[in-house]
Each structure stands twice: as C-alpha cells, then as structure tokens.
Image 1 (cartoon, one colour):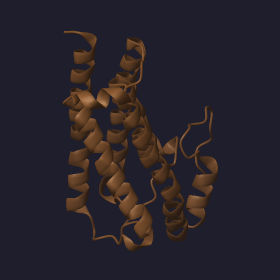
Image 2 (cartoon, rainbow, N blue to C red):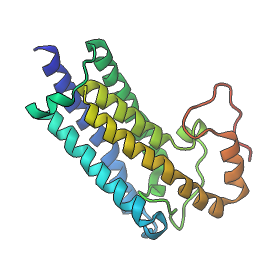
Image 3 (cartoon, helix red, strand yellow):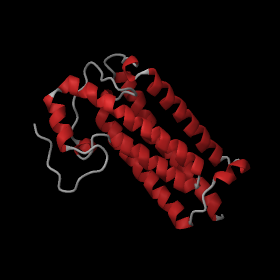
Length: 204
C-alpha cells in the first residue's frame, strides 16, 4: 500500500474513532437531559453559520476520503512525517473530546444556554482549560487537515473553530449569570485553551 492510500485509510479509521468517541455521549446526554434548551440566546448568526460550517466541513472531509480528483488542486505539499503527525494529533483530539463529553454527562448542550439542572464542572479536563471540547475540535481540525493535506479542510475548519471561540463569550456570560463568583473565580484561575504548567487549583 502506497503512503497516500495508507493515509487515506488512516483518516477513515480516525473519523470512525471520532464518531465512536462523540456520538454515544451525545445520545446519552440527550436522553438523560432535564429538559430542552433554547437556541434563541445563541443568535441567528452563530446558529446558522456554525451549523452550515459544520456541514460544509463534513462534506469536504468525506470528499477527501472518497477521494475526488478535482480536490487535488487544494492539497498541500506536506512531507509524509508531518501528515502522520496529523494522525497523532487527531487521535489526541478524539481522546480529549471523549474525556470532555464523559465528564459533562447530561450537562452537554450544543448551544450557549445551560440546562435547568446544570452543574459547574471544574475537574477532569476542565481543571486545565475552560473549553476542552473546543481545544479537541482544534486538534481534530489540524490533525485531519495534515493527514489529508487539504488546505480547503484547514481553512473551513479554522473558520468553524474561530466562530466557536467567538460564541464562547456568550456561553461564558450565561455561566457567570448562572454561577456568579464561582465561575468568575474559575475563569480567573483557568485559561481558555492552553493549559498553564504549575497552575493552581480553582478556588472554591
């Protein structure tokens, strides 16, 4: 098997692994949720742009895995070692996503509004960063883009990630309104995405 075929096969297995890591947690969270959440606070811009961006990202990824010859013009001339490094980054992102969703449990939503019985979580991956799922998303975008050498996947993926980070400000506003000083102290002690070495535990 030549390297491009091996990398394409690796990307397919990585995509399957991501689905196994993420989908069961989302199903369990939906079944055990205390009630529906409103999407109105997210705003129509973020609601539609993120969902359309996610669909476009998935369409590009599936097209890369087929593969479609016309997409070759968008490929980057990456060395093989860098593309295999993308696989390692993707595996790390999938593992972080699974850890995050497992710790969130029934608190999981796909919008900025918290559930009626939402609890403030500051342990597990949340001990190190405030938005571990967004960090996992970034790792998956970079990992898949390197593995497939797709500049189109990279561009759309970074756009979706940027929208998520912009939306995170609204998410944190709701958390401050819900948990007050407890979240303010946690936010002061915990970075958004990049863990700090030797950081202190969040204050009670």
